Length: 378
Length: 65
Image 1 (cartoon, rainbow over the protein chains, first blue to last red):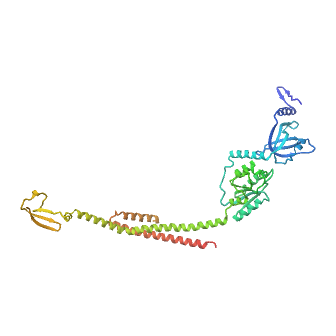
Image 2 (image 1 turned 90 degrees about the vertical axis):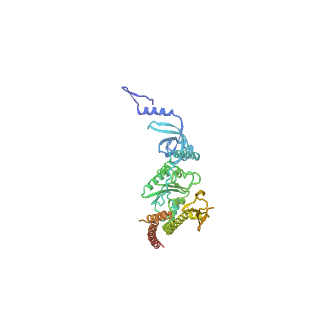
């Protein structure tokens, strides 16, 4: 088919076939490249020349059709199943009869352990940059209801229920059973998480699984689940038993527990310990009230003791001050000076202060401490 | 008059008396006032203690075995 336009006046119009031809031509000039995604809707039929499947981007669900020659596909012996992650090597092409865009695969490689680890590391960096691992809210002391997202026959579920009711018999639990493994696990858990949060009075959610292989635990690192955990309206406890590699949902959860039993201890308090703590508080309350009273009484008695002594003290002080004044009064009187051996000499009524005030033969009067006597000046 | 107000006044009276700057007549008046305040405070403390002990007895008897 040649790409030729039909001329309608000054308008160029292409037939569908020639349009498709042109686009296909243009696409065929694109290079051969690797594309990564999850296999879904794999269709292989022994009567068909090609095998078809859809490659899905796990982060946002974008889809790309893939076709590969059946002989080539069989030779790869991949035994691919839905949900498996692969690298497809091929070139873009247009199936002209239908106008379907797809990739013509030359080879397919199953995503290896190393690829998974590298992809996880990249996802972890990206989520960390988005702040997905930063939200850590405190768990409620006593949750009204506990949401539990877990596998339907999991020992994890039994351990959790036993420990929770053992510690806190009044606990109410909403269980959402779901796939925790396989290609649909991540979306199933996202749905279960949303449903359990929507149940009334659920204050905390436990996401539990009792361990598994690296591949088994991959859904717990799925971007959709990790983001759902981080944006969950109530706090989430991640209880995914694992040995080495921490699933990313552990990092996004508000709290993580190494086992379901440990998770149970996080979500409910020990009722008997709570009761004895309350009893101790009540005892302390009574002691506290008596203590306040006792301290007031002591302070009052101390003040009263001071009051009792104060008047006598005041009188004593006043007496001491009086004595002091009397002492000073006495010290200032001339009699004290005479006591020390001085004498007052008088001539007539005047006190003699100079030898010139008297003449030889004058009668004078001498006063000493004990009395007075007469004398004559020589 | 609250307990705290009475106690504060009592303490001020004692301080005044201990400073010794009150006249003798005034000191005796202050003393009488202080004793009156002391009696009032003790009465209030006794009443409070009675309430506390009563409450403690009620709490004790209501305690589950």
